[in-house]
Image (cartoon, protein in one colour):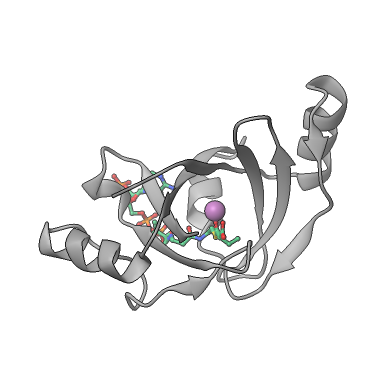
Length: 134
Ligand SMILES: CC[C@@H](C(=O)O)C(=O)SCCNC(=O)CCNC(=O)[C@H](O)C(C)(C)COP(=O)(O)OP(=O)(O)OC[C@H]1O[C@@H](n2cnc3c(N)ncnc32)[C@H](O)[C@@H]1OP(=O)(O)O
Ligand SMILES: [Co+2]
């Protein structure tokens, strides 16, 4: 069902310092930040030859990454995003196999303007999974 790795997301407590570290220390192609209010995060994409890194920083008091950063104050790997061809078919198959889809179960439009869903980390060896329909 899952296809290519679309991105690895890293939650960061300080976006500017994380951007500078990737741009200047690691020499990566770092884009500009943009807000995703529907997801409660500010996002910066870093393009690598074979995938992307998504730096995420809380946007607002209800950000879904607030607890994660409280538990991991230096930041850390937050989720992996895998591409799927049909997100509704993928969702229904996952639910039939006992996986928990987060939120109300309906896809939201993600940072690439495409439908995304999240799967509970406790169902996947402690890894929060995002699915993106491409
Ligand atoms: C920019 C848009 C989009 C894109 O297009 O790329 C994005 O990437 S948006 C990214 C941010 N959005 C989300 O993360 C949405 C989905 N997340 C959630 O619904 C919640 O964050 C969560 C996963 C349900 C956790 O909610 P929280 O309020 O933090 O609950 P707990 O703190 O009680 O956590 C329960 C349990 O799960 C462990 N946990 C939490 N987050 C993660 C994680 N990222 N990776 C691994 N494990 C995680 C947490 O430690 C708790 O475990 P225990 O302590 O053992 O109970
Ligand atoms: Co993401």
